[in-house]
Length: 119
Image (cartoon, rainbow, N blue to C red; front, side):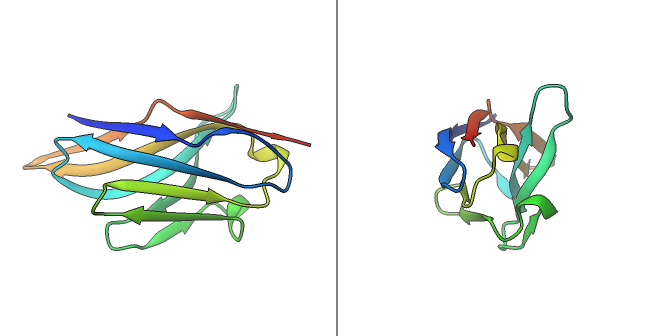
């Protein structure tokens, strides 16, 4: 089983920065895409950013130019550097990992970390 452990959330003022980390552990197999999603109460979880094993990235329009996703394949860890934070970035941020163990694919989620941006 693959486990994801997130860290780095917290409270920050608008315009500030935070860095989220997510480490995958356990029986990982081939870890393909990793990413971050976020969710606020009453709304659907939305994609923030993803990165593939080869380094290709994708971002939600709302975070382009402010957030940067990166990955350390040796550590099975994904990072989300969040700059110029806005109150509307306030949400629970979830790490996601997609991979394959032998012939079985998996899609797992972390427990979530709260990010609160005050105005």
